[in-house]
Length: 308
Image (cartoon, rainbow, N blue to C red):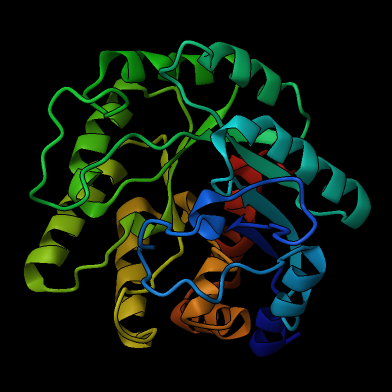
């Protein structure tokens, strides 16, 4: 098998995607179905309120050898967080995917332990995405707000993830990355993965300097991994050259063994097709050895989410 054939046959574990059924499904997604949802970070989301089930995912991913997927909670009504996990488990039984679930639970609320216990009892659950409350912009303020990374109850709540043997999917905007790095350092025995390449939305010199400082701070903690995903911008098309530079810099910061590619589909589908995205990811890493590519596309996600 030559190098081109090897890349075409490269096994992929998609480390971050979503599924939903807005027509027949049992779940309600306020950000997709409310009459006046909050603006989405990618702008126009009119293409997203549709059915996206395993058959749709597989059609989108055709042409790439996806051998496993990790479903990350899709922000359904927070009263249905365990229901979402059960629904995904039923999809797995029917379709053989997703192969792991990152469920939702708050870590600072009075019922946090109860919800986490229920989520952890479901076999496909490997981790939790519990988003801290964050500022809407770089200059906004959140003094004393419950659920922020300054909230003692929220910081203490991360202990529950350790208790239940769960990893943490960390998702914050770029202006919170350095603050998040402090939390990561306080939890050196907790497996943590940063979502979406730290959201490098601001590609100006100042914006990239802020992103770079935060990424460097997070990468200094060996328990922190990074998902190479969601390189889309609010305004403008997918930019291969800019995105390649960000991917390669992130890999240099975190190392080959702590990065994993992910689609963030169907959300990122508003900017680029699945096939084109993963073609580009493969082009970006064309100078890497096959074993290093395999780590980035498959092995690291398998190890982090315990899929081996």
